[in-house]
Image (cartoon, rainbow, N blue to C red; front, side, top):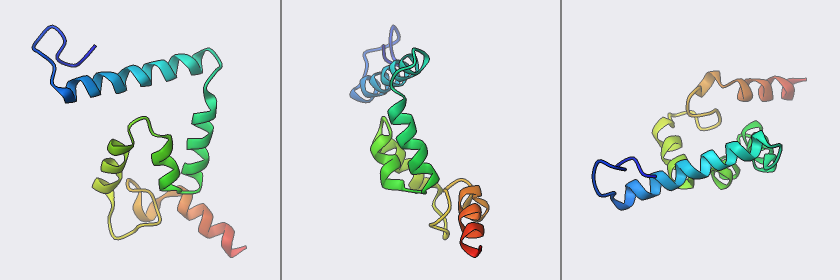
Length: 99
């Protein structure tokens, strides 16, 4: 199924978007059945460590993940692209280093 289904002939991008949506749905179904959580655990660990390359590897669409990250990058490169200086993970890491 593509976003253009029943409306027009799909473009290559429509087919790619439909395929990614299908992969996400399949992953959600696997999780609901108690399978496939390894990928989620690896993604969670990468997030905790602010390991961007690790997050890109675990993303279903690595190119889109990189685009989202690039769109949010500011001067601050350590925190996440949404939170910047107020990134909870970054703040906790800094706090734990002080002790």
